[in-house]
Length: 470
Image (cartoon, rainbow, N blue to C red; front, side):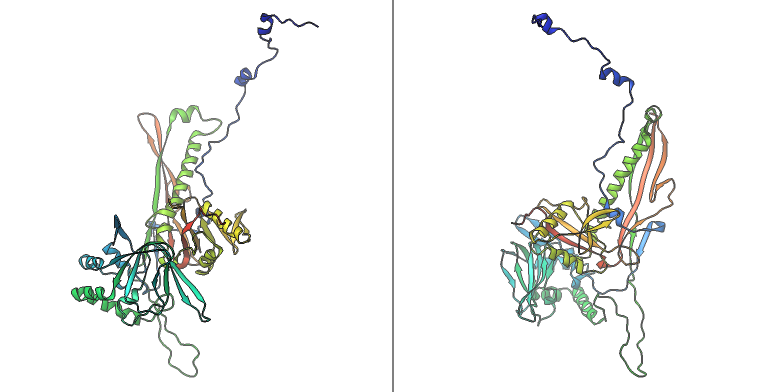
């Protein structure tokens, strides 16, 4: 057989013998997906919180009267290499709680002396006289003591805003019960007993305040600092029994419902002509609600009034021993409260937990939560939440919480039965048409969260999430 190899034969286009796919597509239906959205996350915090009705938009948390006040962290201002404590922040000291004379507080702040420390430096020695208060502006300091068998005990790790030595300002016989060693370099401010005494002598109102504070330790308290309920036990015969009553806080905290809102706009031409096979208004509304729910969870973490980052009790905040989240750190979080329901951590923090377990030859548990298998420690699930921030230094926080009103835990607050309610606690209200034929809908969700007792939520702060074990 001979083949025609002339130029004209080689350039000739083959004749089409059937309908092409490009033309055929004009006569077919297209299979379409619903609109997709990358922002949607698992939102475990919203799913795991028990939601309580806040009728009237306010929820009041009544507690037993407690005398343990002024245990917050102190904040500082920095100008170059100079660090100064904010005068009003001194009110976080139990000794100065409620004292609001800014002029006197400023005088006390001026007496604080800055001290820079190096890694490995011993700041105080156990058994030495305690004659000053230490305020940590930046850095990490470990506290150790000696056990009953002569071995070293690790007591605590302090970080930015923490302090120690409060008792040294009033007690002339005070001695350090621990040794404090710097784990990193940093800066702290010290206030000596002599300087504080001079400030007290120069301000009669401060002297009166200190004298009132000195009477507080005589109030009978339980180990949680609450006003004690008098009772008798183990007695014989007809012993006179003490009278008792349960005292309450006179000014309990109230949580007002917060709101996340947006106005959804849909052109009537779109809703009328382009409404099949999917309802355009419905899809627009679905994605808008997803975004509102994401913002709601973000606020439950970040909001200064009720968010977890700002409202966990300072006594329930701990620092990791070495930086990354070790099994020992997770145990320390777990042992500080009863009935812990779950850990909550950034996915990168969960990965860091896995690396530390692998380095020790340990395998995390797996438990089922709402039909999904998730990683757990000591049977307590570790749930991901990408709303927990990671700092520029690649540090994050790991929360642990007990939930439910019956268990005196963390609860979510909302109000249902709203006008035009679309989902529980979320309403979609028609706002009308404008001159451009655009339909508007007001989409609103109301929410908050309340920690019923301080130990309901704990947090492991400044966890390094970018360190790999060698």
